[in-house]
Structure formats: structure tokens, C-alpha cells
Amino acid sequence: MRGEFRTGMNEDQASGGARSFRLHNNQIPARPLEPALYLVATPIGNLGDITLRALETLAGADVLACEDTRVTRVLLDRYGIQNKPYAYHEHNADEAGPRLLQALAAGRSVALVSDAGTPLVSDPGYRLATQAIEAGYKVVPIPGASAPLAALVGSGLPNDAFFFAGFLPAKDKGRRDRLAELAGIPATLIFFESPHRIAATLAAAADVLGGERTGAVCRELTKTFEEFRRGTLSELAAHYEAVDNVKGEIVLLVGPPAESVTAEADVDAILADLAGTMPTAKAAAEAARLTGLPRKELYQRLLDMKERHA
Image 1 (cartoon, rainbow, N blue to C red):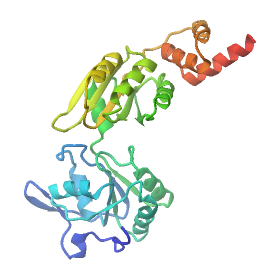
Image 2: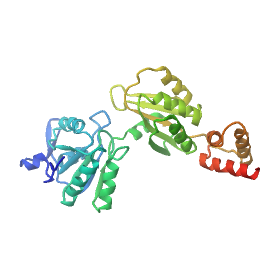
Image 3: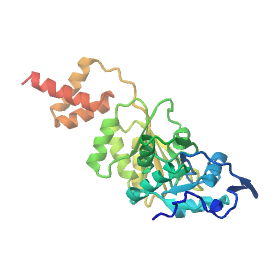
Image 4: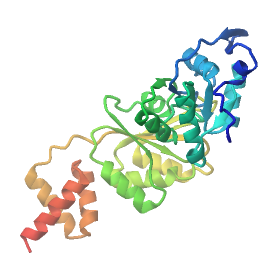
């Protein structure tokens, strides 16, 4: 990416040709884009899940930036788009980011895509978008496929409120601490997870959040072997503990906690009982699971109780 897009022109324009995309064997011209940073959602598996607006943006942008040029080239070839993609990812952001901002400064249109789904959702595009906004450039979202939303609507879990938490920490303690922090949120929790960690994550979730809480493991969304497995966290943990060689990209959802009607006096009694058999932090985490109240609030409450009775 050492200056390849200095002119800000895509290959079609540079060669004097028309910018276009192909749809059902028809080559469709792409209208000119105004200078801006376009955040373009791309398919998460099935290449048919692309919008007409996204195709026109990918074909018409002066500069097309992506995580992996090989992945994006497959999509571009499918729709006959000649625009050349340039890499922008976490490993070259310090070099590529300023060049993309220079293109915006020169009055060019810049389209940004991730390998799959909506840019800025668990990918390095957030950094570029914030820099563009801070510099006063227009940022335009081109909505489309999104793995968290596809999983949510197919999971059967409540969708009136949801919380996307990205990836959980890889180490068990960090994972459990994070789950404890999220335990009391009155919404469906959504996580990305890797296939080799899904069993451990479900075991931790069942332990920290409660095995009776409902969940769903959504695997290979929109692809040939798409799978939705629904059940309690205990049931899901047992299933994946027994399964070898899980494959594919995974979205894990956990239903909201049951509404808590625990009285103040009952909370204190629960805390006192738990504190008699386990450390303060663990007692607070367990109380959070039982009552649905925030772990930090219960931790401080337990410290105050111990101070009063010291």
C-alpha cells in the first residue's frame, strides 16, 4: 500500500472505463459518489446477501479498503467489479490509515469493508472511522448483513433488548469475571466465539450465569451447514463438551436473567450466607447470579456489611 492509491482513482476510472457491477449478466453503471468514508456491510457467508447500494458503492468508490484483499476479491469477482482493493487491517493501520485520510482530504470517496458483515463490529475499522469523524469528513454507513443480528432473530430469544459483548477473554478467570459483570444486564447477551473455545465458554457461562438460563449457539450463519442449537446453558455445555472438532464461525447468545424480586433484607442474608463459605469477590459474583443485581454493587455492599460488623 505504499502510495498505490495516490490518485484516488479506481482501475476502471484510471483506464477510462465506466465504473459498474454485474447483476444477472447485466452490467450496471455505478453512479458517482460524493467524497466521504463509506462503511459497507458485506455478506457473512452467502454472497447473495449483498445490497444493490453496497454493490454500487464498491464499484464506484475512488478507493476501496478491506481487511484481506483475497477475501474481498472473491466478492468483487462474483459481481464483475473491477475496483482494486487495498489492505487496511490492525497490522498496517498506522501506515494505511493516514493514506486513506489523505484520500479523503483530496476529495475522494473511500469505501471500507471487513472480511464479512458490518465494518466496525469487532474489527479495526473503528479507528479509521473515528479519525475521519474527528477530521470533519463525512461518514456514511451502507447497512446490510450482520452476524449478531442474524443470530438474534434466528435464536428465538428475546430481542426487545440486547447487548453485544464481542469476544470474551481467552483465559478462564478473565472470561468468568466478564460474565459476572454482564450477569445482571436485563437483555439478551450476544458474543462472538471460536469453535475451539465454545465448550469452555459454555461451561463457564452455565457456572457463572446459571445453568437454567436459556441460550443459543448459532454456527456458520447463512452458509451451507448453518446450525441453530437452542437450550439451557447446562444443556448446551453438555452437548459441546461431548462434541469433537467443532467447526465454523460461532455467535453465542444468552437469554436475559429472570426478573429479580429479591427484597433488600433477603439480599443481605444471601450475601452473609455466601461470605461465610467463600471469598468476598466470589460471594458477590454468586449473589449476582442468584439475584440478578450488579456484581460490583453487591461486592461493595458486602464490604460495607463486613465493615459494620467489624
